[in-house]
Image (cartoon, rainbow, N blue to C red; front, side):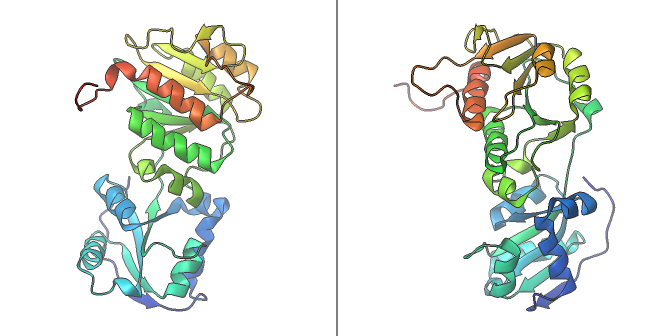
Length: 282
């Protein structure tokens, strides 16, 4: 998160797709440009507000002309300007081109990416972290980040060559949880070293797992849940780094679960002791 004090932003009205600012924003669809700039696009007023309230730095607020005069939109624009972000008021054509879909959200924001340094991860108590080995599907990654948020996990670690969590499709799938769940990244060697120093259970899901995922005691120490690649599963090296290999029992003909589903099943079991229900008893 940036701590630099910036001068107040500027307001511009843009109607042309050839505008260089719009061209640059549209390039955020490409991973290379996101990597070079350290920026990404988030869609929707709620997501933009949630991000700002969580301390993320906004560079540019974009909204359609239909939002002019709307109290909530104008208030958000004023807040962004005060924080040094530029505000672009754009035509529907430009808004659709940036979103790359019909009926886009009226409000979008360009934010600075945030990555958690490895040496700041300090699990205590019964903290839970999720590690994903070479996850490739943006929808899976976004759903896992959202599920980690819902289950109360402390963060997600991306291992090896994974899909970009700041890709537009992934951000959409997180439904805003991208702004609530810390993300870290490591290559496989660095993660194996990290896992070797983990002060608790390192549980990996594996077809050769000998332990029912419901059997370990997840209440006494930090848990690092390691999930393998969608097609190949985790590497042998990562499996060897786990202190226990767990498996989800199945009764049907399917021999595996979708990665996001399997992660959700395991996460909610691991976090079951920490989750309470406020409704009436059944």
